[in-house]
Length: 375
Image (cartoon, rainbow, N blue to C red):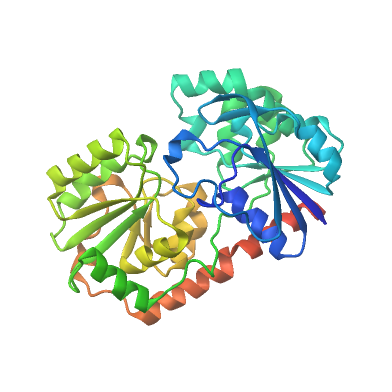
């Protein structure tokens, strides 16, 4: 099958859904192409390796945009590229970036993926809603009316988008039931006792330290400030490792606040990490904590970690699958018993990692998406 992914940004060095699905489709033997822009969005900071290498077997076409604003990217030439490729299926990712809008004026079957959640649009600021109405709403409308399939990758996505759309489109969205999960690559995220010992030594953690990791973009929307009162109340041998700082003013101020309120030496804030280094960082930790849903939650369980996540619909499979140590409730999360207990054995972490591979490996999830499109 010839599959084309259309998305506003495609950055293999960072990953994200579009990169993982492209690699998975190619791995499954499909002729896979990507149409995207030449832009690296400002929110990821300065990338040492730029876009990074394209996944094996994936051909990427980058179009120079006519207009950009934040995550919004508008470019010409998308229909012309599709007509040259003649794909059997077009997968649209990132409706909110407005980039895929021309796809819906073509003859090709389209599956549009929805990832909206309560932290993006439904509870967005006035500015967010104005931008949605000015630049994004028309793209959503065309996707809702013109796609062969609508698929969510967080369970609340259809409702979140329905709240913003209203009218006929909201009614259509609320009838949708097709869903795939986010996932991880088992060859990139796995349990490794050797990596654990080496990385803990490199970071200066002692055997008695218990390390909580949060790997996510360090931006205000992640609400990492809420963790300060939580960690300030648990024993000092519990350390916090934050991975994903862009090194900007917000990150620096946040780090200073953490050091002041939690205590110097109890927190380390690192920048973006390569996949291999990130896996080592997960292995060095004993628990992963997330204030809002993030794809890195799946990477953490892939590395064998138990997680603390919120009671969010998008994470029901995590909570119901036994991966969640305790729900995240801001400063009231129960971590005292965990802090006092011994660390999990290598065998327990290995079994959790293998279970996650069976449920959330990207190849499996790509196959699920194609089965939906075949119905």
